[in-house]
Amino acid sequence: MRESQTAESRPYHHGDLRRALVDAARRILEAEGPTALSLRAVAREAGVSPAAPYHHFKDKAELLDAIADEGWQMLDAAMAKAKAEAEPRGKLTALGIAYVCFARENPALYRVMYDAARDNEALPDQMQHGDDSAYCKVRDTMIELGADPTATVDLELATTAAWCAAHGLAEMAGFKQFEHLKQELGGEVPFLRAIFAHLGLFPHASHD
Image 1 (cartoon, helix red, strand yellow):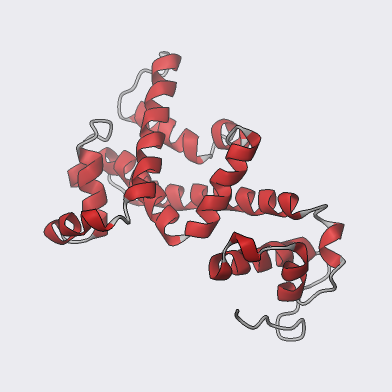
Image 2: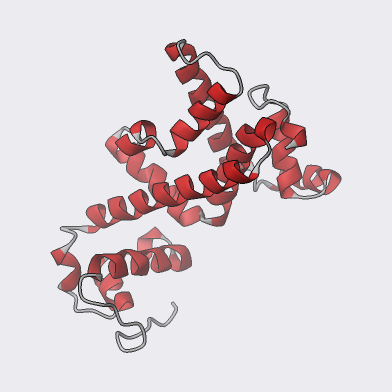
């Protein structure tokens, strides 16, 4: 168990309590896992009274939903950055690699994001309907690469297939059975790029 910082060593400004609580929850989550997470533990980590979290979250479930929402925002930002930095024909692959890398770098947060989605039996509304969401980035990139924007069912199926491919790879990329491929190809990112190249949905994946 790590030692929490005190309120004096990590103060928050009036009006930022919710932000401080979510940040504290993420620190606990990444360091100790979801079983260590409670409103009391988050209050202690944030350096506030045990009652303070209840001003923003009625229970642990609401706190986890807030953490999940932040995770989706972080994923959106990571994918936006990757797309902006890629050459045109490599943008879809760059989105996939950014997705997998985000999941690998934030395993506890990523798990909470999908646990919340399973509990709600749906992905967050903003993921599919926000113009700048991760899902829409994949869909719009497919259109930029030549997909017919009027073929709505085919486009939705293709976007979902690409998302599922990235999600599956994120779940499996750390398996030790793939270490020899990573060594052969020169590291994790070349390995991810090669996998996407073999899926057929990611044009010119090996050249982005």
